Length: 323
Length: 297
Image 1 (tube, rainbow over the protein chains, first blue to last red):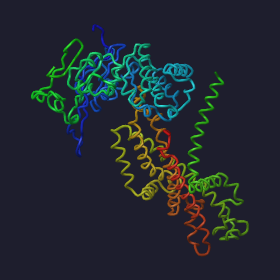
Image 2 (image 1 turned 135 degrees about the horizontal axis):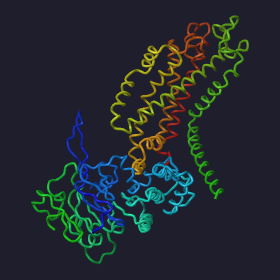
Image 3 (image 1 turned 180 degrees about the vertical axis):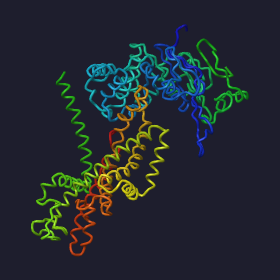
Image 4 (image 1 turned 90 degrees about the vertical axis):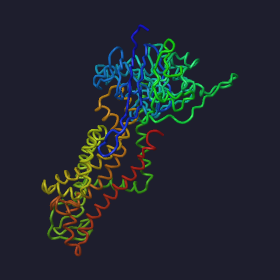
């Protein structure tokens, strides 16, 4: 643990104001991300899981700089980047990239694939001439398993999986050290998912990439991640090594989540924990533990006090009074 | 390698052509739009070749043969009260109408696109720009144009200025609407995470994706612009006699409505056909360019 992490996020919150009335006064906040700490080492994958609406995508966007955080600090390669303006952020963007969820929406429909990839170099390596740019793009296409003849095609001529490869090539173009994958395979068919995951893992090995892998798909996260962060209602619930969390979840929410993974042919009877009700609205944040409204083991004090987020075993953090 | 590259260029080109052909085919499937295209094409040809299409000049007076009916003495459409050839004046009028229409729509588009892009992309500018646009919208168009001409004086150039200012708000609103929806798309976010400048995002990624509604707007606007030019000239605020402008020709012809009705009716038909043609083609384009059938088939 002596290495400095590549990415370190401390107590990051993101609150969206809700404005109402003639004077657009702020009436309340949607607490999308509520005090999250995490770190990612070089060459490591940190999975972030949670239900839709738990703030995992917002967290990714805050880290990448698409949203400005409300509070907290973000260190990338040892430098604080959380409060930088877009102009100053540009030099970090080389090393910090993102793969988007929807392969149909993440490419400009009027731009040829080759042009889209070349544009990355036009933005960042303006001294590279046309010839070299094209050379680099062709290398990239090959790297992600596409062909040179795809250079002149438009995005609509590709399948979902191929488009996601283009998205990966674009993220990879500047040799980043960290890639935020926001539901990067969720929109793909299962068979294509497997190919793209394999590609991501191969690239990780080859370039020592780190991933922040955001997904609601527990199976995919398990397959991809070294460590896993479980989020609920914008808050961190449990963080630990993937193997440990999947084998021995401590937080009642994680337990419920994992028990919901469909498994074929189980001889061993598993208890399916069914959660009652819906996730509360992040605009109307519950007092105390955010999970107490649905928690099967909630005690009266859970509604009063926010549980501390503490290390129960080495590198295994849980936020629950009962653990 | 080079032959492979050549093949690729060819493929890409053929695909682009294919797309244009598809749109055109969709367009002419619509019978009215097909008629409109034919009319517009003939007007364009008439306008470009006006001096060669008529054997008389538009200003050439012949006081021995005034108010001749159509067909008389080699004047296809007759002559007016000064003995000027109506056909010649009609085709030269087409030239004028198209020049005024095209230039005012072009200026209106430039202004409207600029304002619309800024208003749609920067939330801080949105309120200010759109209130100004609302203000322009609140004025009846022709009144606004008359106001501008009253300030600047009567001339065809001022008509162009007046009509283009009047085209700006509509265009700005269309562009703003498109920008608002396009800027939420993931490919715009992707460009932001790559560190692209706002200018690059606006001009290379947002603008090309809102061309479809703009093409329809420009076509429809041509009809309005031509109609307004004629209206202003009819009222004496635009082209001044003896300029062969359709509206001014109607104004001159109305005094002779009973003796020589063709003097008012012929330029009137010219206006009607042109406006009709641009409107139906605009409607056809709206269907042919339907974004739902656009790129993601």
